[in-house]
Length: 317
Length: 314
Image (cartoon, rainbow over all chains, first blue to last red; front, side, top):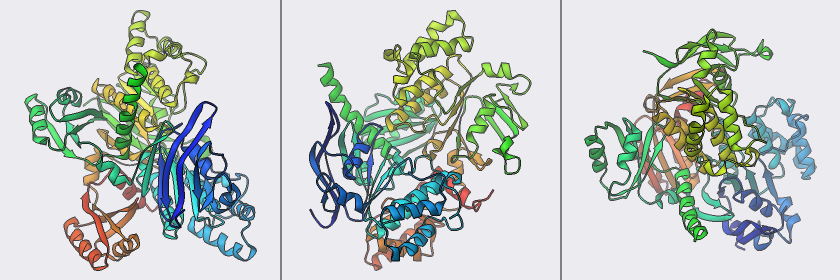
């Protein structure tokens, strides 16, 4: 294992009876990187994270976290990682300070470090002045920051986040990711799972999981630029009618209503003016037509469609 | 001009809020027929309270509302016939099948027997649930449940559809499918109000209202709200990351910035000059720049700008 990698996963597989939850997944996370594992519910994200945390034994393949084999050295792994799950494991009848104190003891934070560590975590999480508040009275965003503080009380060099910002507003979400970045700046490596594609934009590298397999692995920009064609966003009169007209035009790959807008994917060399002219000649006024960067959701949907088409064919035959 | 949804100074104060600020305060909105209105804001902003009042399942503390021309206080029964409402929580009977649920909602909403069969078939086809009619709703996936709830809300062919966070907790494939269905409903002329915590969904609406701490901070077409921002956005990505941050922090051009993955999004007054100066500074600092370009402002930029300039209180 390279000293530069926090996580190395090779052909990792988990079967429950005849059901394959994780199928030959391989990836690496270099030190200090933020890796996002994306996919719908049931794709195998949580099973993967559990194997990497040393909680669940792999059926086949191997994984090393911080140099330790997750199957044979699970205890070594557990000591060195931080884990924050969607259902923040906080004691709701304890205060902010009591929760931190509890986790500090659980992870055996040395006595001489203890006070300074808790102080710095309260500062980082912006919980100064709220130390004596009961956790149950905190808003979602504050509970989330407290859960993060508890997960890193022992200064783990590797942090696992399972759907960390579900239900948190954009402002608090940015603040949360700012904290994650500052950790990454101190060489902490992060693996975060999510099914919110906009959250994935915050990661340096992304693995997309679907149906137990890793179907893409790259940085967000490369994933987007690998998409076929150019995505045009069209704001026009009667988008429903425009959708019918645009479908099947030469050079048009895909047309879909996008709320009150129309999304048209065209081949890279197709002149946009042709589409505009065709719509105009049908009496449809185009107020705006411009290429927009595809979202990670666009990337994911297109990959899933490419995956499921041949499989459907297999099933039919 | 006639509005499908019109409310005037709606305020809701729950009994537990006697002392503190109300759940929603003095909300006035006018939505013309056939429009898609997006209500965005964080948890606890008051989205659910507002939608519940408009769906006439809850009375406001003060203020008034008219839906499809009917006053919700005096003509609630008439208004309800024109309203389809999809609450955020699972509203179906888990031990009934897909078909039984739809039929139940048809009877509840007084869909005439003669029309019922045809309408149920239409909706099953529309929501692509035809193959699952005999499956119990408790055994449906999350995405299919949402589609079934949507079909049930549409059973009486309402002119107005009120949707409370239909895409929260839904996986990306189902989210995409739900939006395709919603887009079709709007094309059929139905007026739709949808609430969402996701700013990217706001971009797809005719009009967006931003709700925070019970107040409507702003409303308008997304492109207008974005254009009204007092700054423009540029994106930059360079290595080493540390150097990039140092350059950005030191730059006189940058009014505010935040990271999105390896990219930094910067708010600047003059994007062209800022790009030139940043390119030079990055070069001087020995950084390798991979991205430096102007980017479109988004509804997320609008939201953050509004909320941060309020200083947290409101």
